[in-house]
Length: 128
View (cartoon, rainbow, N blue to C red):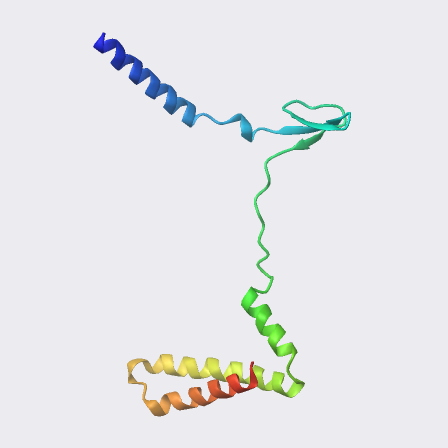
């Protein structure tokens, strides 16, 4: 009797694993059928029915501006033409300052950082 229970338990475990590993029918193609004012879904084509399938992979637009860039563009659109030009120049200056400081590594002094601080201050004043 004890051996029969153990065998039954092993059989149940094997069946569970087999069912978990098998593909599900929910992933198959389905058809949306409309008739007499009602909508039904079927696994076989129906007259006037529309095929429904799994959604394709999502496509991301790699060339689209990220939200941070769009926010920066919106902020700068409110500025005058001169301020926009100055902001663009400050972007280049900040990148140069950061590259210079990174190249110096640990040997950076306060005098080395001051031009970047003044550039950042002007950047904030203009609300770039």
